Image 1 (cartoon, rainbow, N blue to C red):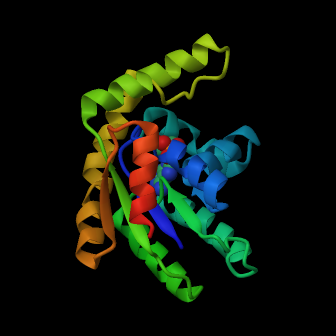
Image 2: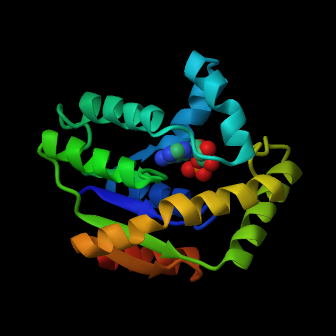
Length: 196
Ligand code: AMP
């Protein structure tokens, strides 16, 4: 079963993806994590995307589609994603959604569900500012884009470029919307119900 987790920054996509990895052995494909890894290892691509990411804007479709293609062609073919892939933070534009559809078709893989985590903006700001404060208190690194200024840009990018995907997947009949404001366990239970 291959699924997409869709929702604005701070909606809980990463947390829920992690649970699906632990509970079902699914494979999480987070383009945000891949891009951060590229930055840490100092690749040319990592250097190129750093400024855009810190500002809160989206990196180019070409880069993220390339990253996903590499992962899927490496893994899916030899059954690495036997329990299914969780696309976390991808796709974020209509062009990415089309590219993912084509790629899955090419690999003879289904897209089973698109799970939208619904939240409201005040909660997002509180969660993200809280996430930064919590990391700082524990002496952990704070994400460079977890500040109010970048968050505004990230939210705008979500509404302008990513939220049209809700209609796109609704029209395809793939969309399930879940209340992302419920507790972590309740959200996990709603996702489980959506996956039967
Ligand atoms: P995330 O960890 O998913 O919040 O992503 C962090 C940042 O990485 C985003 O604000 C974007 O700058 C970039 N990014 C991650 N995924 C994508 C994507 N699918 N398309 C474009 N940019 C992305």
